[in-house]
Image 1: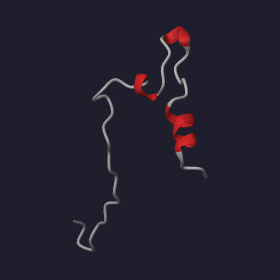
Image 2 (image 1 turned 90 degrees about the horizontal axis):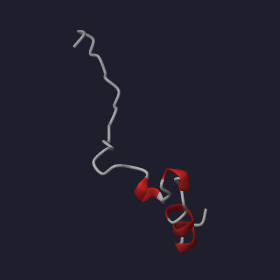
Image 3 (image 1 turned 180 degrees about the horizontal axis):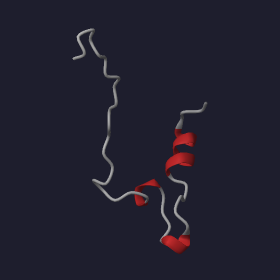
Image 4 (image 1 turned 90 degrees about the vertical axis):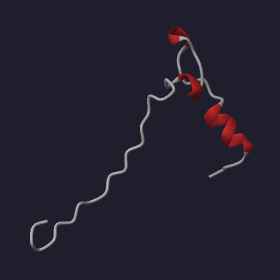
Length: 50
């Protein structure tokens, strides 16, 4: 997989939102502070149930 400048332009500069919705690349798809990261980890139960 090419991870150079060409790939970066293809991914980040490409128009993602249709012009009928205002157009734009990745920067126009999300409202700032609208995305939260969530980390999910397995919960291990001990032999005593805790």
